[in-house]
Structures are given as structure tokens and as C-alpha cells.
Length: 70
Image (cartoon, rainbow, N blue to C red; front, side):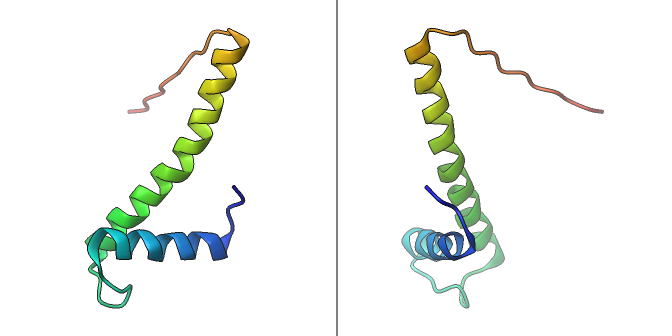
């Protein structure tokens, strides 16, 4: 999937109207935030699934590192 400004805007409006049946102008900031969060999750999960398939097919170990700075 190619992600550019046009596709992001189209997908955001689609998520917002699907989730809340509201137009962008009438939606609250909270609803816009949740629609955007769901869209980001959808975009990132596609890459994550592709990566998981790659590791599964090549039988390589996968490591996840979490870094916390305080």
C-alpha cells in the first residue's frame, strides 16, 4: 500500500464516517483522534503482519526490544 497525503485523508474520512457517522466538520476532536489512531493502527499492522510472515517463513528468530527512558 502506498501511503500519501491523498490516501491518508481519504482513509481518515472513511474511518471517521464509519465509526461515528459524522462529517469531519461536525466531529469532535476526540472522535477525530480515535479515528486517526485506528487508521495508524491499520497502516502499521499491515507492515507488522508482513514482517511476522517473513520471520515465520524463514524460520529466523525475532526479537522485540522495548526501550524506556525516564
